[in-house]
Image 1 (cartoon, rainbow, N blue to C red):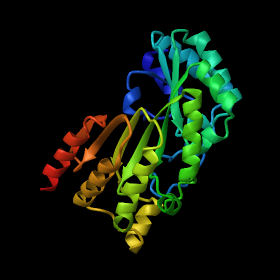
Image 2: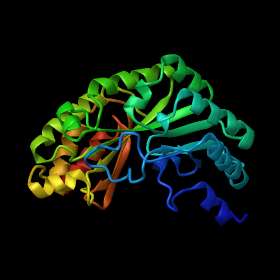
Image 3: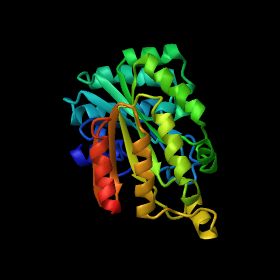
Image 4: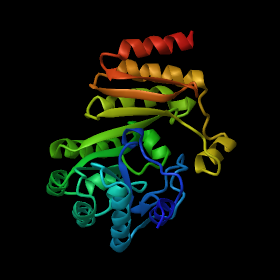
Length: 283
């Protein structure tokens, strides 16, 4: 098989979506779609949810090992691959040792309820087997907004899950969505999201600007006047309030400023410089 034929056999789509922190790792497709798939704003979970058979995953691993035998980190593809059971993940980690023996670390997307379904002992064992990091969409720390957007979890459940990951020494990268509360809840969104973030220990907070995707429930809400999107300027005010309220040590980045700019840096050291950039844009 040619390299192109192998790629076509192990990936459902030509474009592989993964976090920027994982751009240099190998990617193993283990699932398609999202086990929840009900968030009103989301356009990414287009595939019907399914977990590949272990035979298919083994084939993908075998072929991936031929393509990228030198890789030391493996990212499991799927909108929330951590929904797989402890037994399934353990088997995948073990198979990886056979077909990609240089891999030492694993990472994947996860939902909060995926974490909560694992026991502390299962998390500890997964960490020992090489689970390094999870990428989790927090989106907001405000329960009214989480409920409104049908996220399917509460801020209390988030705190529970992150404490479990901290105890298991599993790292986590999180995303938040600026503008998710619309004009009505912009201050609430910023303050309560900051309150949540200040109580957890993410390796990175990635702030993204809300995009109203076509054919999503949120787009229908906008057309009906039930959700009023924020302007770029409104979002900058919201982001300023968020940053002013953050006290945690982490790396913060926003790659969607004014749809054109990026601000990033380590908190708390870079807070003042990032706020100066925002204030200049606002002025």
